Image (cartoon, rainbow, N blue to C red; front, top):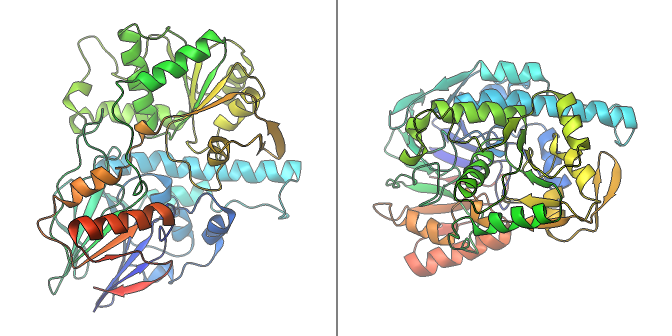
Length: 458
């Protein structure tokens, strides 16, 4: 018997975890953190629904924390199998997992120091040592190279166009059943990464629905970010860009660099204040063969991501100095939803000043600071204190690395035939239900929207 249990990203965009049970073998596809609303984050602290020791293998679609960030906790709880992923994902996991642990340890230290946690003492979800143990289990596998990851289960990675190393996973089980785990699907015709690969025939397909109720704005040739930069520069302010340290930082730099070269924006100092993002840029540069052809460095160029006045910030002291520096500049820092990291210090300093701009360039999950700000909050709590919002809050959805509803339909159309069951995951209820109705009306497919911990038979 082959069964699927939805342990995360079910009726929500976060915590992707899908458990495949096949004839006594257990494979967990993605092992993500729940983020956003407190009721979701609390799931990270609950005992895992099945004993971690009973899981033979973990398979990862890509290296964003909502897909890999729970792995150290799983290892600390007893998981001892191998973790299969693409080489690009393995590289990025070596950045995001220790960084996630360090942030959690630091947040716990700050909470205990300033006594703004209800827990005494506040504890991190896992330690950096757990992250290093998890990384020792990584087993890189190239694209389109089938490999048996557990008895009776063979998987194959296909490029998804969402992030360096991102993939959708095709799992073939003995007895003929095939499950397609979509992960996060990238977009068509966007810079840096190639388009998603066509889908394959499957009995069950799991597909994200993050933007299932809308289409991204038409390609504006960088006009939106051009306006934000010019407006902030005119006011003599700072532009703070909370950005996912892997994936989104690269696209922001791509556009700034291009707009500078086309003389459409003033040349400002551009700082990347995220050690993880700095290392990720190096991985992207080292793996240019996996990027669009126009991303190959030209002669004498060190990197295709460096702007005219580009600087990376390494130490915490440098970051503090940059936060205190009032000069007009662009500061790109993590995290993308303003849930933690160095960007919080920049935001706390910039938000009360009307000259400054906070620019969000990605999806903002419910319950995050980013979501509160784009929804019009007049103040936000940062490090235990309320910070008034006087700065301009801007948002550009066109940089999203997630396919919109039109792109989802386009990709579903590449499947050779309708899957027996299409399961929508990784979406809030509104967008998910909207995409369900659209797929049913346009394609005539059977569509499910599984609930948390729901189990289905393949």
